[in-house]
Length: 142
Image (cartoon, rainbow, N blue to C red; front, side, top):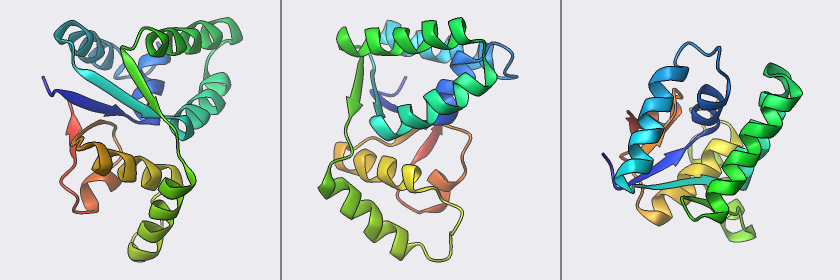
């Protein structure tokens, strides 16, 4: 198990949407992370995307229950929610300009990459290939 994992929007959606094809695999991986005491990170921008998309895919009560579970994990310090500060936003903007050959990378992903780089996190729970394409040493988990 990696000592720290960043959870991207895809990871949260696979975990929170029971009909997702990879739900069971992601759920087992997340439980293993928790059991091993690995640090899990995400951002306020990722959670913004997650809330928006989860409420489109899941029944209201299930979406509420899942999001409350994420917030509870943060309160219990099993999850660290990093904020996109103005400095981090500026760094992501610099990356946006740097990766002109990769126009499909979302700005949220760029903010995530800035924070992962800052925190020394290399593992990311995602299906998004952009994390691999930027050459910053990120690896998809599991």
